[in-house]
Image (cartoon, rainbow, N blue to C red; front, side):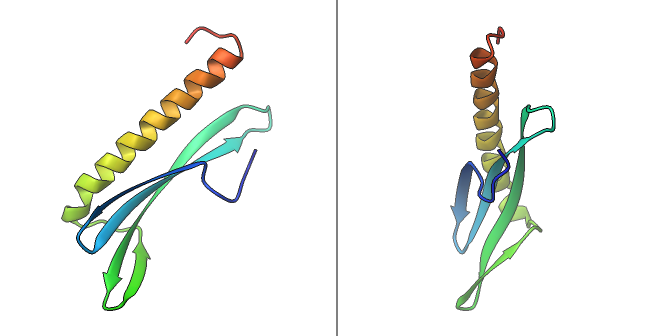
Length: 89
C-alpha cells in the first residue's frame, strides 16, 4: 500500500501563506495499515512560492486546523478498517 502520493491533503491559508497537511497510508510487514502526516508551509517570496517546515506564530492557527482535519480523517479511516475486519469500534 505504500504510495508516492498522499491519500488526503488539507490546506488552510492566510494572506500570502498556506499550511498543508498530507496524510500518508503505509503498510507494515504484517499487512497492517498505519497512517502518518507531514506538514509544510508555503509562502510567497517576491514572485516566487517557497516551501518550509518552519512555522511562524501566524501559521500556528492554520497548522492546528490542518492537524485537526488530518486527525479526524485518520480516526474515521481506522474505524472503517476495524469494521471491515469485523472488530467492534
